[in-house]
Image (cartoon, rainbow, N blue to C red; front, side, top):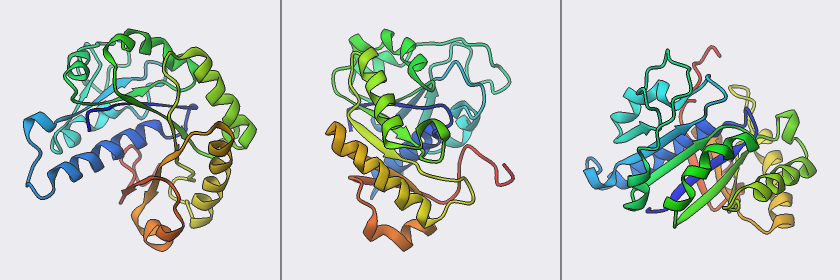
Length: 230
């Protein structure tokens, strides 16, 4: 649990949705069988996306706080009406102490710019790349491989795992999940990195759980970062 989790992906891949649901799942696992995690088991999401002002995890700060998850990384707090980049690296002490910090980077290679300040504090980590097959920029094996190679050529920390977030929002079907998994597994084989997580809605997971081949599964009931009408 003491690993720092860094999350990247192309714009619109669903990085923040994954980060939030991953944190919620960790909080739930920590809480079992205890009613609530202890203070020492608090989970932090570092919102370092200074490029896209939409679908920011800080919008759900109050909701996440109820699950012992704290949004950090903004010098002006979690005011959802404030879009001025005002990064704070106040979460670095938590990383050094071995507490669970999930770093949500901006999309693409531009997100790595802010990671430079974190390298010296990170010793144990996983670096995840979230892919949605149904985004034009990452809809083929070759495009996904190109993206990972580009990130690895810039980052001092290589990507260690892939997240399957193949979805069409509320229209997502079993076929979307499994087709995305098939493509991503080709990428995994080519680059020799694991398919670490699958993000999937609960009702779909119950129908296809025996076919999910990722090391772990993050199951959710409803999208956190989007309302039902979006």
